[in-house]
Image 1 (cartoon, helix red, strand yellow):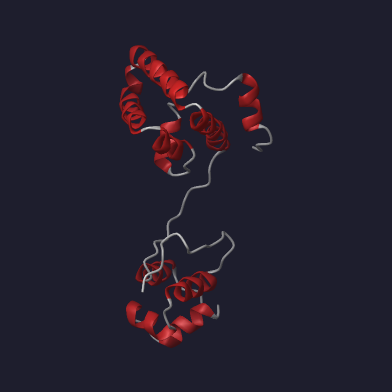
Image 2: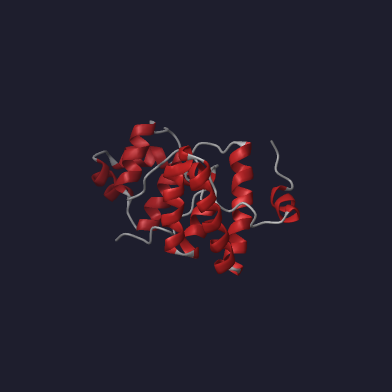
Length: 176
């Protein structure tokens, strides 16, 4: 009865009512079936879906978990994080086009980082391990918005991969 985990689409502006109804329909559940899964009444699910009552956050989380969907809050990215993501996305594009050269440059930079500063050591180890996985996983990390990727990008070994012009183009239009 479970649908593909990647088919469900939601947008920032969706209400709890839209979120519950959309996911329930995707799974092919009736309101009564969802009520059974969440130990509540069909009427209560109906009031949520009609936006007559907004579920508390813990209730919404419980209802969505019953439909195999976890709610998570992702902190808004700072300007510096958005800038880092834009630059890393440009590096990822370069990595897709010329993986050998970009990975070689990153490994060269990591050697220098290892010599220069002990405070970077844990991140150097992580980057070295990631580079061993190949371009696909590295590109995914470079373009990810999750907190681990945000933190890791702060010690990126990809300095010198982009030209000054490519760097300017990558961040052009970013607003503070």
